[in-house]
Length: 319
Ligand code: SER
Image (cartoon, rainbow, N blue to C red; front, side):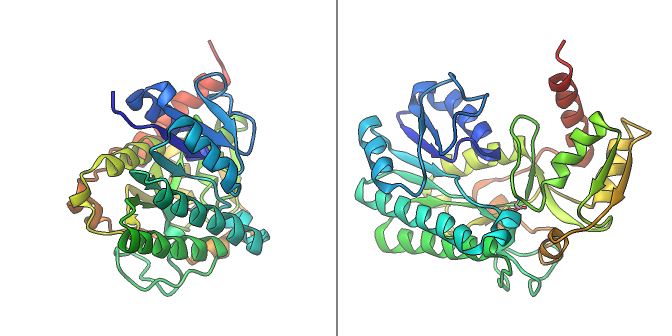
């Protein structure tokens, strides 16, 4: 077992729940301290050390670091793209203040590593849409994207200025069955599986040909841990790494579901999230992650659909 003591902030979110479970397998349950502003997610409840913690509360964070002897932090608390547009200043405040506080704590407390997620939302309408490169035009138009890009620059700055080992990934839309997404523009690609099983139909808030980069949560969690475990000399970029697995449209995910549920139907009622999606890349070039630290995805659309439907069916109709 590795000798690290990990603090996860925002452990109740879509990534946090599964990351907490995966890190506990690797580092031991008691060495991974899960925290969130909310009560424990059912999958984390009673499953290991847990604190209620507001990611903006630096004093309480420091108390936990000292009490638990924390050596690494995964800061996952954030407002996402759709929620952020409803509360831009709040999103900026939550996303930035929590990051800067954690970066300062990282330096002061001499933490060995920090993880902070970025997103494809750093890109905007002026970015090349297809196979978007690691380094390209970056002019985000959502407050979420602005906060993520500013955050990447801060992470790079703390690395160069203070030697802090901060690592980051630009996640595409993440699809999972264990934990629920919240407030994102890519969330439709999770809801659609639930509705397919529950109602046999789905009304999508994006138009049928809106292509977005996506990834199955299993790949995202493995990629995150691989990035964090990689030797420091492999970290050629201190901006977040592009990470790619698949790209599909609502029409294509519906067709993938119809291979299992032939009567499934989809219709479309685009809302304000369409404009957010239209500003983002359709697919991502992740050569840098593949070359620098060996990233490789495992799930494509059909493999993910089969796994999602299997697990969600079991979850909805426990035997
Ligand atoms: N899944 C996120 C969102 O839709 C993108 O990082 O906001």
